[in-house]
Length: 230
Length: 220
Image (cartoon, rainbow over all chains, first blue to last red; front, side, top):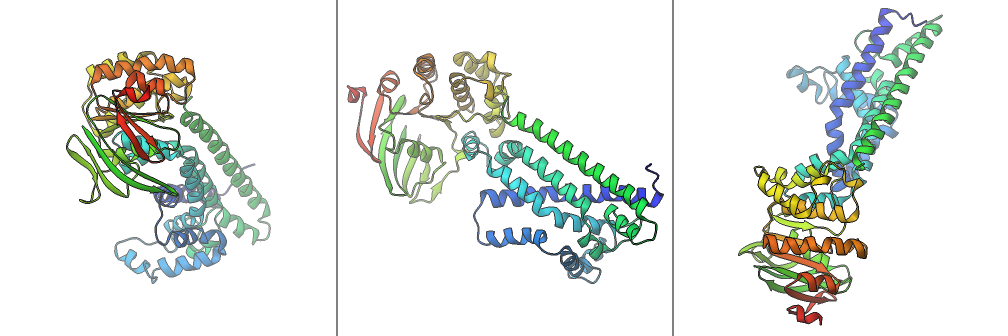
């Protein structure tokens, strides 16, 4: 049943790699920003919040176009990045950047909620026991927020797997380099007789997403039991 | 020796207190809302006074005139909270060891054993805070604060969340602690019997200011 062509397997593997890299690479930034938004007041907080949530409401093609302007080979930062050997446009790394930007609001949102739910009194207790801000974050706040961090990461991963608009605008649809599952399905639906192949990829996409959700539920419950002290 | 002279505006509530105390147990005694918890919060460095001076053993930890404000994590002041505040994701043993871990002190097995025996918490070491009774939780919280080798202990109504029977179970541990360690302690309470049993000096508070200071005879 799952007789996929090598190109299609490549698309599946690429999707997983792009989504995983996008999620893992944005996780530290997501935690940092979520912590800032949850625990700090500073000028420009509202603006930062708005900018982070922008990709959620902008048409993805607009986000993709902005990425092209910023990170294309002749883009604002693209030329500089290329001079230090990093090329994003029309590469799978660019697809990962697009996915990271698109899923960032979901990541930050979930982590922020879970950090806000951590009792600040426990952070005070850590301070009286000699823990500075950073150690308090590492040993108290983040472990207690772990269920939310896992949920956020899985949500971001699933969002990244499904990313289409920004990715195809920024890095196009090159088999073997930037053609993810979504792009491959799109391509197949444009070809006469491609429907059957497309359906197989659809099934795979559903299976991966379901698995991710089940795993996140399981990890989340385990982490939840851990932090509730029983 | 601790000397406190601080002002703080908290919403509509004006807190302005000054007192000094030598070794032994000093009780901050007064009705709810008299500012007791805010005072220990400021001594610990969790709340910043608007103005004033807090000096512990000759070292100012807060002095608005000299712009001194030592952060809480460097004050080395033990704090036992009313609600214990054990870290729910760590075992009792890890909770007890937390202060030593954070301050980078070497492990002191003799002290560890001594504190555990003093508080009878050896059987609890492997448990999680969520499985402890109120009295057990407060004994562990007490041990955790002691093991960071503080120079002053703040006990903020440590028995307020316990019922009468648990209170009478745990009171002896505080007496043992007082007699065993000779650590200066500030004990916050609105319960006269606790204060009489423990304190050698009493600071009577009401409405955010000191009404009277003196010995236990203040409560008779």
